[in-house]
Image (cartoon, rainbow, N blue to C red; front, side, top):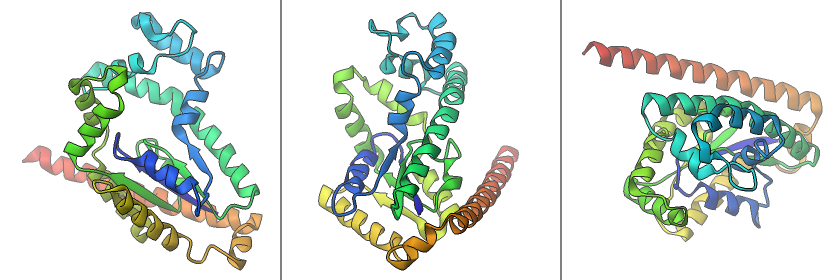
Length: 264
């Protein structure tokens, strides 16, 4: 089974690609990290108690009247590049990421048992969380900066998002072009970069071409060979080791480049 990572920066159109992949003619199962992230911090869960324990003492309006977390308030607390916001974002990720990983692995196992040839891991922070190591390929969705800002403001207008808030959220994430470089380095030809600055029809054509390419050699007889538990475990382990090693090489190269820049 192919684990196909789907990622992109905020308001680049990743959710639209996810809907296309989950619909006919593809009908691929989607493991949505955002949905899982909400579930692991629902009232009464360990994640919820950890979030309230750390954030509520300094964020009195963190909880809604019904006791659930107010994500807009939490976003204002963690998005930004100041030392305090960077620290709080690390704490937030440290709480949520392990819980989401655990839930993701369970969902992957269910999809494999069901006999799907591929499952889509819809993870906005795929590379930031290090979850790309378990993927056999990645679809990265990006747009130009002007389009990204316009779509983000339009999407979250009802929540009272200001232009300053939008800019801070965008700057808090990796630029999608940097993610594209990393994706190509780790996955080679299995890194599909989608420019979603055009029309919906353009996007549909790109998605169709990607799935046709990704499905080569994974249908028919080979689908059941890959479904054999020993074969699946061996192949999966090989993919994880390969991706981990390439990501490690990437990190080393980036550190060297940063060291050189610092000396100039």
